[in-house]
Image (cartoon, rainbow, N blue to C red):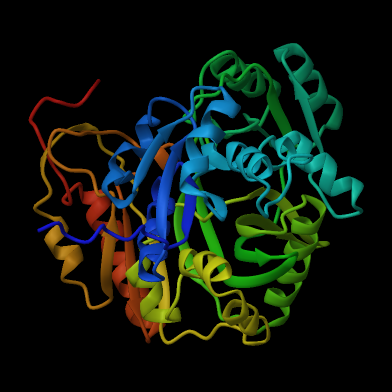
Length: 430
C-alpha cells in the first residue's frame, strides 16, 4: 500500500540574519506564532562573543553568506520568505540588502551604512535638525588629538565606528590619553570583526543616560521599554555597564525621550522592525549616543515578561505575524507589574574560574529572577572594562524598590569580596 504523499508545509517563513544574543529569541517567537525561520549568518564564522547564544536547531535552514549577495538570495528563494529581520548588530546591513533584494518590506539600503557607522549616524541626525554630539572622524592620531585640543572641553570619547557593547569606547581626559586610545584601537579588528581603519572622536555628553527600545511598522513606532542606565568609569577605558532600571512609561522625562527617539528613527529611515536607542538627557534635552536597528542585546526574556507580559522580541514578531494586533498597542502604553533591575556583574579580580559557589547566594536573593551568560569553570575572569568582559548579567524583579536596592548592594559587596567565583590558586596575573 502506498501512503498518501505528505502535504507541503505552507507555514510562512521568516529570515533572521545573525540570530545571536537577544536575536536568538526571534525564532522561538516566530515558532509560537506558527511560522518557520531560516537563518543567515553574515559571515562564514559566528563571531566569538556570540557563539554561545546561537541555537542552529531553531531553524529549518542555515545559510552562510560568503559576500556574494546574489548567491545568498538564490539560496533563500526556495523558502519564499516574507520578512527579513536582523538578530544582532553584525546582521543589520545584510538584512537590509536581503530584504531589498527579495522585494520585501524593510528599511531600505540608502541609509544602511548610517545605521551602523556612528559618524554618519550623527551627521544624519544633525542634518534632520536634532541634537547630536560634536564629533570628528579620522585615521590619524595627531588629527584626533588636534581636534580634541582645539575643542578644549574634556573629556572626549574615542571609539570604533561600528562595533557594539562599549567595545573600545575610551574616555580621555587629556591629549596624551587621546593618543594612547587611538593607537590602541587603530588598525585592529573590533569585537564584531570589522577593522578599525578610522576612529570616531566625540564630545562628552553630560547628563543621565537612558535607552529606549522600540518596534516599528510602516513608519509607526511603538515604545516597548524605557530604561534608566547607570555606568562606572574605568581609567583609560569605558564607562562600564552597572545597572539598568526599567522605567514606567508615563512621565515628562519619558515623553521627551520617546519623542526624540521617534524623530531619530525617522531621520535614520528605521520604519520596520526593532531598534535600540541610547540617549543622554542633558540640561538642554535628549541627545543621541547611538541607535542600533535591532533588538537590545543581552535580555532575559522571562524576566521582562514577568513585569511587562511581553518583550521587544515578542513585539517585533507580532508586528510581522499580527500587524493589526501590534498596531492596537500604539494607543496602549506599557504597564509594569513589577520593577526590573538588570545588574551587570563587574569583576575586580583575575584568574581561571574553577567554580561559582558564591552565585548560589545571588540565586537566593528575594528579588532574583534569572541570569544570562554567567562565566563558568575554565573561563578566565578578568577585570571588567567593557560589556564583553562582564562575567554575567543578573535580573532582579520585585514590586518593592527597597528590596531591589538591598539585593543590588549585596551583589556588589560579594563582588568586592571576590566571593562569587572560585579561582584557581596562582592563576591571576601580576
